[in-house]
Length: 127
Length: 350
Image 1 (cartoon, rainbow over the protein chains, first blue to last red):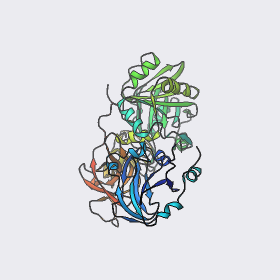
Image 2: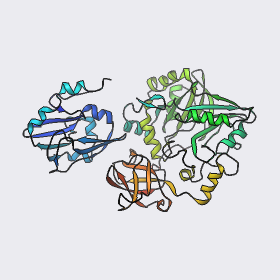
Image 3: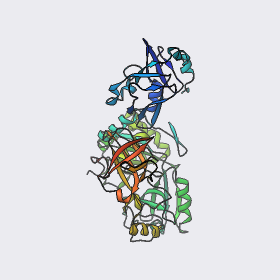
Image 4: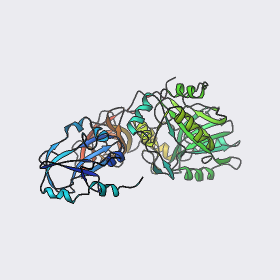
C-alpha cells in the first residue's frame, strides 16, 4: 500500500496536495483498495463552496457507495472530467491521474491541521 | 475476507470486475464450503421431501437435481434449495449457510420415523468451477474426460482418489460445475485447480454480480420468510399437483395475484441502487408512498450499467415501464426489463 509523502490526509482517507494557491483532493491508496473496483464517481460542480467535512462527492464501487468529505473549506475550481468515463483510474493511480477535484482554500493554513503521511499511516488498521 | 453466516469468506481475490469477466469469458473457482448439505435416507424420504419442498420430488430421476423452496406453514420462504436424488431412497439437499441450522430443525421436525437425517455440512467441502471453459480446463488439469452431464444432472466421480459429486449446476448463469468433496480433500482440490491448474479464484463479490445479472434470487434479499415465493417466481419451481407445507398460501397468491411482484430494473446510470432503496413512479415526491423497494442492486459489469431487482406494484411491472429510484436523495431513472439482464449466459448450452 502506498502513502504519498507529499500529501496531507484526513481520517476519512481523503488526501490533499498543495499546488500553488490551490489544493488537489483525492482518495488514498488504502481507500481505493478497500472500495475495490470503482465504477462511478459523482463530483461537485466548479464554483461550489464547501466547508470542511461537507459531503462533496460519492465514489461508488461494485461493493458499495462511499461519501467523500471536503478536507478543508474552499471553493471548487476544477473537477477531474476523466473520471466520468474512466473511474477506474482512481484504482490504478489514486494520487496522480485519479485526483477528484481542485479547490481554492478559504484559509491555506487549514491544510497544516490535517494528518501528515506518518500520522495517517499510523491510524490505518494493521493487516 | 469478511464474516458471512459464521464463516470467513473471501469477497475478492484479484478484484470483482476481473473475476466477473473471467467467469463470463473463461472460468473461475469459487470456495463455497459455507453452504449446507443434508442427506435424507429411507423408504419415506421421497414422500417426506414431497411434503416439505415445493418442487416435484417423485418425478426426479436418480442423477438429477431440482431447485425449489422450503416453506413454513404460512407459505413464507424458509430457504431456497436444490434437491439431489442420489438413489431411489436417498437424497441430498443443498441449503444456504445462513439458514442451515433453521432448515435442519424444521426438516427434522417433519420427517417420518424411518427417514434418517444426516447433516453433512461439516463433512463436505464445495468448490464451484464456473464459466464456458470449465470442462475443457478441468479435463486438462485432471488428465481425464468428465462425464457428459445435462444441466441439473450430476454424477459421483473419483477426483484424486476421493469420491466427489460433480453437478452441472451453478449460480453464475455460465456453464460449469459444483463439486462436493470430502472436507479433508477440499484444500488439495483447490490447490490442484487453482494453484497448479491456473484457474483463477473468484470471491463472493463476483458471485453476487454474476447471479444478479442473470436474475437469480439471493435468500434474505429477494426471498424471505415474510412472503410466499409467488411474487418472485410467479409460479416457477412450485408443483401445485401435490400437497406441500405452505400450499394454501401459495395457492391463494397464485389465484389472486400478489400486490407487488419481483422485477428487473435497468438503470440509465453506472451508479447503483442498493438494497432498501425506494422505487417511485416518475416525478413522484418522496413523501408519496413508494411503488416498490430494491432488494439487490449493483453495477452490472457485463452490461456496463447498474441493475437492480425490486418488488414493485403489480400494475407497474410490465417491461418498459419507466421508474425512478431514490438513491441517497438522488433520483436515478430506470426501466423495468425482462430477466435475465444478461442473456448470453452459457449455463444451458449443450
